[in-house]
Image (cartoon, rainbow, N blue to C red; front, side, top):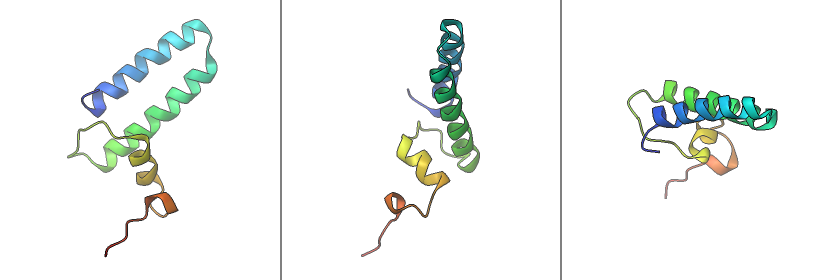
Length: 72
């Protein structure tokens, strides 16, 4: 996907398809993904790129060991 808005829209479309197929596990997964994307978008309104799962995780958990940045 080219940007975060396209990713959110695709996930919403996929949720409808998963609900129709009765795949509630996928629905829950996509709902959580949308929640993270929307939160990321709210924290970075100037940034429209499609963030990776690690970027979203680090945005929500900046103190996690995986997210620490060390200056040399």
